Image (cartoon, rainbow over all chains, first blue to last red):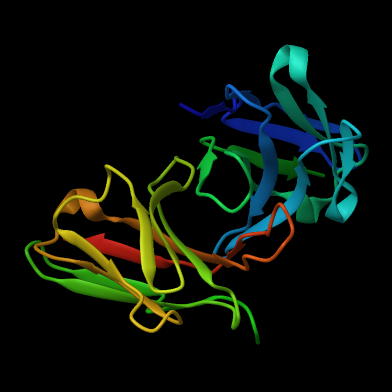
Amino acid sequence: AQSVTQPDIHITVSEGASLELRCNYSYGATPYLFWYVQSPGQGLQLLLKYFSGDTLVQGIKGFEAEFKRSQSSFNLRKPSVHWSDAAEYFCAVGAYSGNTPLVFGKGTRLSVIA
Amino acid sequence: DTGVSQDPRHKITKRGQNVTFRCDPISEHNRLYWYRQTLGQGPEFLTYFQNEAQLEKSRLLSDRFSAERPKGSFSTLEIQRTEQGDSAMYLCASSSDGPSSYNEQFFGPGTRLTVL
């Protein structure tokens, strides 16, 4: 069965500092991996996705993520955080293709301080 | 606005009552998903449709829950005899089913259910 672990429930960073959110997955085959962001009162928005090829993927809002098969990880990074990045971030894995239900982690809440 | 819409956005009900939620997917999207998100958790899959066919149901979907997509467009999720444990955010997502190996799931804003 697929599973996703996000070890950090809550992270606080200073505006302008770098950010890394951790995600570990469990899946027997090649995973389809996603990062979503959820702001209060908003739906989930896709930041980026990985299927195959280059293991460093670029997303929207200046985010990137690196797939490391040996570590079963797909960590999200941003070099310089903006106050508007404060939100809940979810890592998710899909089986076979993205056209199947996703399995989400429990999320990491990001707070940004001045 | 051509995004996924859900109605109502908020619902407060008393235990034992029935509730129904509606989801309107992005037009031409033939896949529609329902997820449930409780406090402090990520979304959990409930069920999904391809056109009007319900392809899969999660074990989370007890017999009090039923979902339909009668004409392959909008979908409804009904919960009968609500329990306090049903309090959650119910999310709907849709995607196309084209030749691409992946079609992004677009999420609606959700319906927040509170069962008193």
